[in-house]
Each structure stands twice: as structure tokens, then as C-alpha cells.
Amino acid sequence: MPAGLSWPEAAALALLAPALLVALCRHLWALRWSLSRDRSSALPLPKGSMGWPFFGETLHWLLQGSRFHSSRREMYGNVFKTHLLGRPVVRVTGAENIRKILLGEHTMVSTQWPQSTQIILGSHTLLSSIGDLHRQRRKILARVFSRAALESYLPRIQKVVSWELRGWCMEPGSIAVYSSTKTLTFRIAARILLGLHLEEKQFKDLAKTFEQLVENLFSLPLNIPFSGLRKGIKARDTLHKFMEKAIQEKLQRNNPQDHSDALDFIMNSAKEHGKELTMQELKESAIELIFAAFFTTASASTSLILLLLKHPSVIEKIRQELMSHELYHQCECCPAGSCLDTLTVQSRDREKPLFHSMAKDVHKDQSQPPAPLEEDSLQSSALMEPTVPQSNPCTGPQLPVPKGQSCHCTSDISLEKLSRLRYLDCVIKEVLRVLPPVSGGYRTALQTFELDVSKCLALWQAARELLPAVVCKHPVSSTVVGLGSVP
Image 1 (spheres, rainbow, N blue to C red):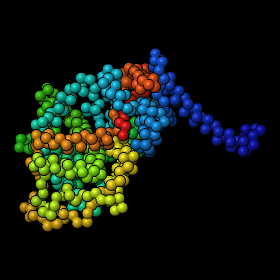
Image 2 (image 1 turned 45 degrees about the horizontal axis):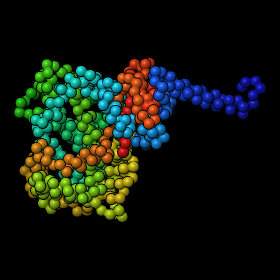
Image 3 (image 1 turned 90 degrees about the vertical axis):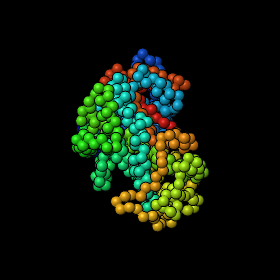
Image 4 (image 1 turned 90 degrees about the horizontal axis):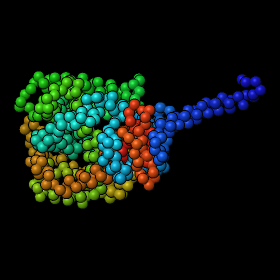
């Protein structure tokens, strides 16, 4: 104990010294980013906080989920600075601000995903490529989504969806919609996009591993035991081993009678462009395809079901449009009625198992970056609650099905017929507008520029960074600009 100090004074000093040290570190951390601004610009940096040294505000972001961005938008406005996943970030929202950034692609900004995402997905993906390499890979992948390719996928997608929906109809009680749609989209991605023939146990194990990969895509770039990045890398390596074995079997089999899947189109397209893809490129492309089809599609599907159940009149209009194009008919496996009729919307004072299951499922996943629904959307949706009736027509007597075959209620669907469903197309686009499945995108600034002119903020290029940064109305020294959608 220092001479002349009493025990209470010494204890107070012992507590005060670390507190002052922490405060000093945080101040120096904020000053470090403030000094990295573009000195040639007189505009201020965006308001906001850079959080704690190295960690920034990552922990707040993970714990608060969708509330992180909305609360800071309320405090700082449509453009604010923060520090996430080991990098400084300027979060940008507002139609005009985002429009300016998107129109400045390759001149003002370029795509730049978080370091953890690049490490886990790999360097041979479309997400991690820019410039000429990005254009080359886009040309190769274009065949995957050509009209001919989509036509070849349709019958198999319809079969998988029909089979999965029958499972929903047969399920007693409420349905965990978000979990169910994730299962459905992963099954489609594995079977149709990659051509994988999996037993149910293999499918569940693979889906669980892939979910672990996606859940850790956005994490601190720390490859240490028990870290999110380490878990993501472990899941990636497991998937790569499985995909390598599956691709080798596919190449050895080379059966022309097999249905073409996305991997076939990728390999054929690469050959047409004079490029032979390596095994590593094929594995990373396969994982990227599933990633692109998994959470976002499941999220959008959940939002679609949620909003349709809140607006039964829209369901009826869709049904009428399907009937007018001969795409809606009673399933012969369910003579008592169509499975689509088993979901009804009832009054507020009745039980609401389906909606509660959906809300719980969605809310649980909102801590992840690609959160499907905003909290406000869930709170405001309590006006009408969908339920599953006690008598399920799909559990009634069914027509006999040949042994070894599944009962599928299918229609003759084609891209040409789907293109005529104008009302359904508008409904889907409105769902994506109201409840976008992705909360934002990542760009890195190539030069200093202004955003949100009314506030005179600037985004700049940080000279000290290995990667260029963006400047927003307030010159913010940031390496990544986040483009956000506002509900």
C-alpha cells in the first residue's frame, strides 16, 4: 500500500486506475479512426461509435440482432459509423443514399465482404471476386440460371416441394415454418442444384453442418479454439470432404441419362469458356450455390406465408389466378380437400399455434445477419392469427399409391405458365419489398465521396488501410460500407 494512503483510499485507487486505463484505450481507439479520415475533405465523418478496441461493437450487434441497426439509426440517422467483425463500417440506409452507392459500383465502391466470410467461403467464389475475374465467373454461372437450365429444374423442384408440403399437411398441430422452409430449400439445393442423392440421415447431418457454416460466416476474424471462425472453418472442411467425394463419383459416373444439375452446367460452361475448373473451385462453387439458396430463400418463404395468412383475400386472388391458368386443382391423394385449404385465419381470441411457432422460430434466428423478419413486423402482425384446424383433410382416406412410389400432387408447370401469373409475381415482389430477406450488403470505398447531402457527411478512402474504405457524408474512415434496407 502506498505510504500515506488509507485502506479505503488504496482500494478506490486500485479500482480507479483500471477504469481510467480502459477509458483511455477506448478514447485512443476512437481517435485512431478519426485521424485516418481523408484530410482533403472538409466534410465531417458520420456520427456513431467505434466501440471497444478490436472488438468494436460486434458483441452489441450479435446480442441485439435487428435492434442494433434500428436503435443506432434512431440515434444517428440514416448514415452512421460503427466497427463490426474487426473492421470499421459505415452503415448506409435510405433510398437515395443507396442508389448513389449502387450507381457508383466499380468507380466509387466495390464489393467487399467481411474477412470471416471470405475465409470460410474461399477465394474461388463469385462473392470474393471483383473486376474481370468477377465478370468471367458470372459468365460461367450464367448457364446455371439460363432458361433451359431453369426448365430442367422445374419438374424436380415441383416434386420435392410437393413431397415436403405433404409432410407439412400430415404434421399434427402447429408448424415451425422457418425451420421447415430451411429444410425445404436445403433439400432443393442439394438435390436439384448439386445432384446429390442422400439418405435422410445423410441429409440431416449435411444440413446441420451447413447451418453451422452459415451461422459463423459473420464472425470476428479470430481463428482460435471455440471461436465462430474456427467453427465455420471446421464445418467448411467437413462439407468440402463430402463434396469432393460426391463430385468425384459424379465425374466417374458421367451418365448422360442423368438430369443435368447446376454443377453440370458450371463445368460445361467453364469448358466452353476455355477453362477447366479445379476440384477446389468446384467445391467452393457448390458451397456458394447452397449458401445463395438457403437462408435468404427460407426467410423470404417464411415472410410470404406470414403475410398471406394475414391477408386471406390475397390468398383467394392467387387461387383464382391459378385456377384461371389451370394450375390449381384438388389433389387426388387428398379427396376431402386440398392441403392448401388446411391453413385458415381465425379471430384474435382463438388459439394461434402456427403463428406463435413461426414467430418463435424467426425471432430465434434474428441475431444472425440475414435475419428474416424485423421485430416490429412480428409485433404488428398480431391482428390476425393463423391456425391449423383439428380436422386435416390430408389425414383422411387416400387413394392407393403403387408400392415404392410417393404420392405427389403436381400440375404441368412451365416457365411460360409461371410468367403469366402476374398477380402472384406482384405479391412475391411486395413481400420482398416489405420484408427483405437480407438486411444489407457490403461495399468498400475506392475514393472519398459525399452521402446524405442535407447533413454534409463524407465517406472517404482510408490511406492507412490495406483495403480502401468508404466515406459518408461525415468523412468516416471505414473499410467497409454497409448498405442497409429500412423496413
